[in-house]
Length: 291
Image 1 (cartoon, rainbow, N blue to C red):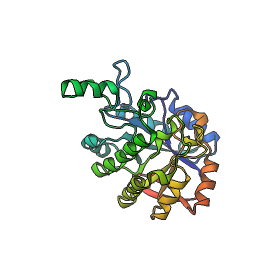
Image 2: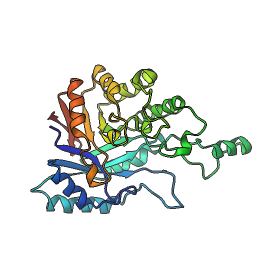
Image 3: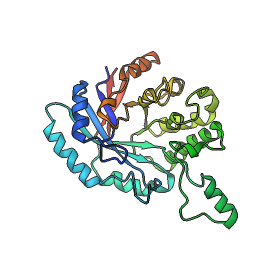
Image 4: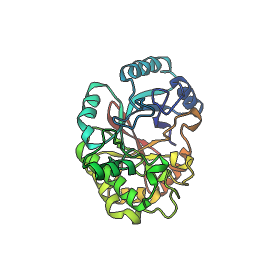
């Protein structure tokens, strides 16, 4: 039985309005023994109306975690984590953060494809021969991201970001939702299979394994109507076939009701694929937990 959810967000992340207390209480109600907050830190994420988003106040966040660890210590284990939105040129900045705070767990994620991406940026470069100062990176979450491009093209570019990110930066513990973008594709995961992207996905999975990282199963895929977690079953099967063993599990909850979302489905899927354990991290050290 899965009793740990180690990917969740609170109001310390710009895309959540939930207090940490409400998230903890929600986890207790669902019978969890361990949770880890993993607030977003995405340097260079495109600002909204001039406002910087996804840059957490780390000192305040750490202080709050310590307070709540004391308050809830008899009811649930609360761990201190972070989710880095990776891009190769940000490696040094993330390295400093990783070394400056006593995290239990660090998630690496690909949320953005490096610019130029949007038509206005490309038009500007073609006209003036240089990039505009406002040029931004593309997030599959946005509808305009998919305009005038095939899903195949976008997926190939996105999976390549994972290989590039791991090559540039390795000081994290698991790679999250490696097919995150498929949640927002025009037809979601219709006709989407491991075989379509076998070559690049094998590079992704081999890089994760060779660097001793874990692969995350993110059950928000069920919430988004995919009928599968991120990544889906055929990718998880290939990961195991290649020798991958370390699996972390998180619902990517931003509200209490989404904590441990469809964990029973994830558990059944993992067992059907031959996995016997999942992994949690304390003080950046992996610990195997039986399914």
